[in-house]
Length: 555
Image (cartoon, rainbow, N blue to C red):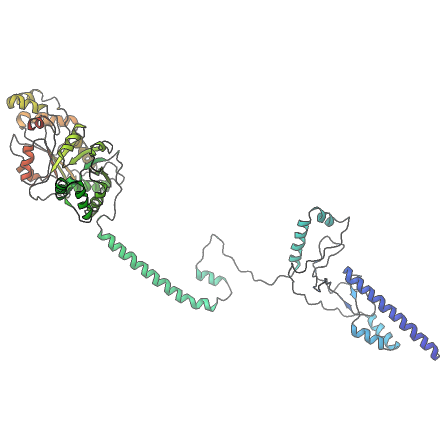
């Protein structure tokens, strides 16, 4: 072959090679725009990932034939003759091909026609943030259902695309730890053995220090509550029972001068006036008042309440003490301090500020009113409320702390004063004849009959529990009547009323003082000031009932 023909042949081959290179360059540009794979002869088969305008690699390729994006990595075993693969010549191969001879090109073509070994998949690109490079949606098709959904609800369609892209990514390998059910509680040691991961050494070093700190706090709490318990054990009224309901209780209204000794304050009031009296009380409000004539009686009533609560925990038929006084409210602080000091369970106060408290007695459902003011007692008697004026004993006497002892006179106290009228107007002989004639006729009731009924009702509660011999209430009838001539009518009247008297003492006109010393009652009710003064001399606490004909004769 001539040299001219060889040059012409080389020129033709060079032109065909340049045309092929330009064609390959155009195909490669088209494949980058459409995202499909092209096949180029004489080059190694490679998968070209698609990139966006900023150079970020788009992980998911959209398939034209499937309804969902192709999230599966290309398999090595798939045939490489499909048009979805792109064959690109490497730069070294292209440069080498351009400088080789025709014989070398033929040998390279034979090598390229031989089956090449499978190419390992490219390493996965780390996931990029969704916000930085959103995926390119597929080309819209008029006949595709996905296009219809996209146009109907583009927001839901976009959320579905993002969810599919998130699911398509390879999640980081996570270990599944066993979870404790919400209803099942396990201790720390049990949960530590459940998890296979090792605890942080810093946490382990903190545990002994925290445990020691917790023990110190518990010791401090125990010491604090022990001191509080000791403090409250020294207070006599640490466990204060709730007062009974007024409609069920036996209400005893007591004035401040009857409950406490307020002689000094009373003297200042009478000599210097109200303002000096209030100033005196305010300056001495932290000074505890000494007990008055009704103090021991109130303490005995509280003991009966305590015994009733032991036998009947929900009992409401109890004694309820009300402090009824015409003192100013500013004086109430000293009264409250004194009540709490002696452990008296008095929860209801009535401070009228100089006004008479008699108008509040019925509002408080008072059963018995005790005061040191005879005028207020007389006013309460006229209102139909059982009342008495309290007098302290002339000398000290030992009283029983476990039993309430109440002594009553008969006529004009428990009974009416009809027999007193006959004795005063017609003498004792007519009186004895009248009582014998009307022996079976009950006497009319007196002002203290209701209080005796209340005591008898509480006594029966103890009798029901077989506590007759240990009953904390004991009643006495101490009368100047003669048992032989006029005693029968008294006992039959009590029987007709359904009342029991524990002891009946008929003195036939003898002095009552010596008998009362043996009884040692917490209170003795009588309508005669002669008997009141006689009992006082022996140290008995007395209560004068201003009722009946004897009050008119004394006036």
